Length: 112
Image (cartoon, rainbow, N blue to C red; front, side, top):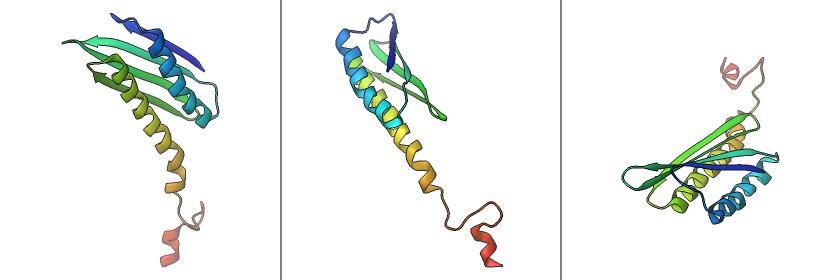
């Protein structure tokens, strides 16, 4: 996994980088691809920290942003949002399938 952690007015700690890499490596295993993940840290007045995560997976782009008083808490919340997006994307094709639906004949054609 290629992880880029950068901050504007904030310097990310080594512990935060290791924590993010550990949590995001689970997503990399789930997606089965070498990912380039960008994590952006900013300060938000008054004394809050914003964490944004962005990466592109197979066929979909994932973005999450979280704001909190603590840098680690903001990063954890953003990772949780990304995990929900990945889970939703992986289960979407199964949930939208219709029984006996093809290009020429769909389930609504049976009513006639």
